Length: 509
Image (cartoon, rainbow, N blue to C red; front, top):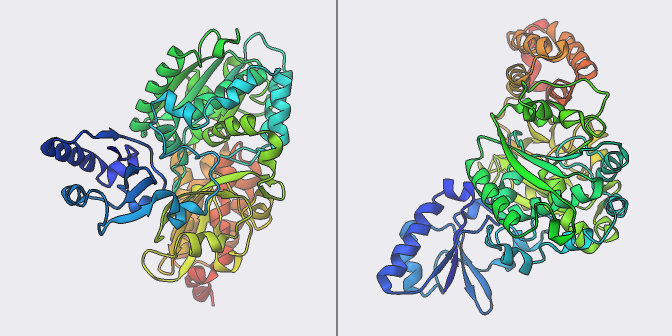
């Protein structure tokens, strides 16, 4: 009997360790041979811990399971039980997804390379070692893949710049510093399918001529870091990494580096400074990292989701991937649904789905049962969208046109009890705390912004134009997105939820 209990951090936080121990103890008590696999999460957080049992018909799911449920599951021979959910693949929330980046997450043993290969792993890398760097870049360009962690810059264009750059040494750096509130996709993938990220980075190295790479993770992810270290050792022993990638004669060495958790190190130049052992402050651009990046050498910097999507693109072709999506937003996006929502978790779907469908249909509305008031997309620097904008298709240009951003696709739901003036203050306070201090608009602007919002809260209507002017200065004058994007949540709160700022307006009258 093969039983799967996730070792994902979210599942563990909900009791998966106790469930795993109970399974082992109960099997030993009954004299049963049970293979316990600690897989990744399927992403249905409200059903965690999700226990699965392998059967001839497929894997049967039970959840959410507690340790106290385990004896009863054994008594029922993992058949009829109040926690039974049927075939895992038939669960509607999972069945309606288009899983490409997360195709294996929750299915395979994260640290079994044979399991990874049995489910399509390394096909992209095997194809890549037979191609030139330019051919790989062309394939990624044809896919339409864009950055999955920031402004959505075309991945193929970034790779071509590094490919064409002159340099005796080139690097590939994975930005795994996932610091946005409401985001957890990077962590889930590193814990549940680490070889996918390794394969994607190896393909990127072959494409641009890099021989060294680094995964920059955060200290707050101990489980992900432990799994990645183990996966890197396995990949190196198997010849996936090292002096001759898959026997190609082309070298690629890859290391994990862990940062101290500074939010600003999610910005690529600040991350590079940290990797070099310097303080994590933003660099002025130009030069861009693609030309002068890590240690002054041409460097590809992509986030986890971008790099982990590359193996599927190389395995199936850029044209195949380009068929998914909407407008200039091609492929799929792992949506991370969180906050006050009934069904939170990771839902991978092609771009183009309306925000209202994501919140009401997939997410099931609020966990409190109250009406949805606002949804913040793109992390703590993302705009707040009211229900009036819920028909907006999920896409880079569509969100930019409404004063928002996709970012890392973190989606945080708020019900009608949320105070949007307080949320605007939180955004500015967050920026003030996390600013690296390199530029004046961010360093001082955020602090003055908190003071200005406090004036508005006390009934000073004259401070509202000042807040608008301050946000405009930060947006146009900041060196990086931390200061430049902080005005998005502030101005969207002021624009779409003016009633929450009415204390000042009424006082002025």
